[in-house]
Image (cartoon, rainbow, N blue to C red; front, side, top):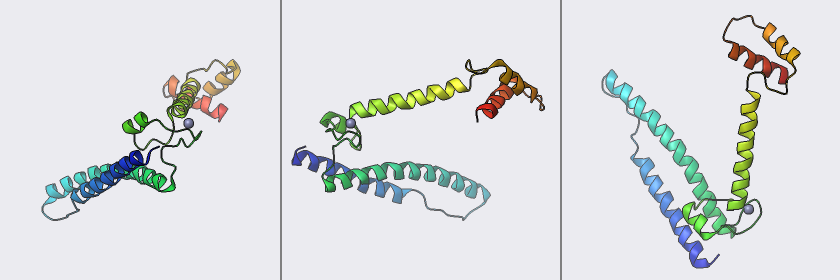
Length: 159
Ligand SMILES: [Zn+2]
């Protein structure tokens, strides 16, 4: 990647960090003055602040990591295969650390995992022998819904 391009991203990252720091400083400080209503709304505001801060912290970490990569000279390289991440991809997602191929592969694998989990939670998964399922049903002692029980029993058998 050209030096000017890297410089461009470095400036972007530095800008993001300083903006986020200003934003964080603006978030309301904890004050426990006033009546009960004020305290409740302050607590609610603090919870929201906390979530915002947590989300920002994750993003800022990514930005800092990317800055570190610029210093190391590895910015724009795929962490998985070492290929150069395209400029367009970096423009869309400056903190990307995988090339589009590796990212797609990763997402495909994640989807497969989700599918597998979905399959195993089906009532009476097809791979399960009937006897085992029945054994599962015999553990019915709480009298809650069939779905819940068969799901739980199945988990007991496989887990
Ligand atoms: Zn890659």
